[in-house]
Image 1 (tube, helix red, strand yellow):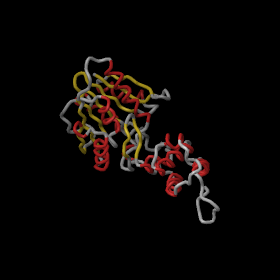
Image 2: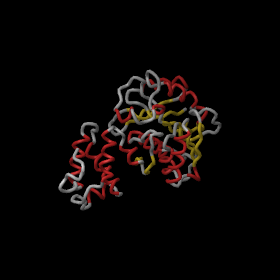
Image 3: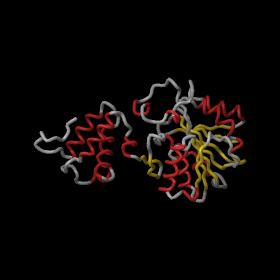
Image 4: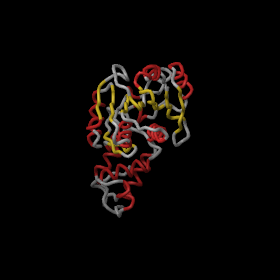
Amino acid sequence: MIKPSESLVRPLSITEALREAARDLATVSMTARLDAELLMAHSLGIERDALLLGSWGEKEAPLSFFEAIKRRKQNEPVAYILGYRDFWTLRLTVTPDVLIPRPDSETLIETAIAYFRKQAFLPENILDLGTGSGALLLAALDEWKDAKGLGVDASPEAIKIARLNADKCGALPRVEFKIGHWGRGIQKKFDLLLCNPPYIARDAMMPADVLHYEPHLALFSGDEGLDDYREIIPGIPSLLTDRGIACLEIGFDQAENVSMIAKETGLRSRIFYDLEQRPRCVLLSR
């Protein structure tokens, strides 16, 4: 892409830099223009809405923007360059130590909200297995202000990020984080269990920005992508209160297999869909 240099008669304006960056990023991203706008806004220290609605076009593009575009050209995810990702109602810190929260995962929160809206009680205790950045747990605690939560992750680095996010969101007094392996060793029972486990088959084709930057521990789960479900689901009955539920994220082609694992455990399953009408959440209950 065009870069500002001493050989140029004038530096690039923001409008010109955005145009060139979007063209350049088209080779690595299906959202090239959006990526460029987010990175420009970040370089300017403003929100994207302010960039789009303000009179920034003829101002000089900051040098930090071109460095950010260079990183994106190397397939580094936008969220890692920005250092955050918006999820549900929250802005969460993310680093390569944690999976980047995605809108698909909000289906779990939507499913839980719809379920408890029809019940005579609200969840008081919430468990998030494989909490990562804390996205699911903190979103749930933001919905149910009187609830308390426990987030578990095998990665000490992820636990640090989750605790940081809990502090930023004002949830620290109501949440605890611990290093652990799924539900192993947890004695308490919960009204709501949330989990976005690894569910990608080991040899699946993956976008370069995911494969080369996001933590493989949070992505891959055996030859079929089902190994972690087989470990997590049998332990769910001992983690739920009598009227508790579990909401697990699934891959778009895993509804039948995950439901069968649940049935073998004695759990009832219902499938819920994301905005693209793909199976995304399995709700498990007794």
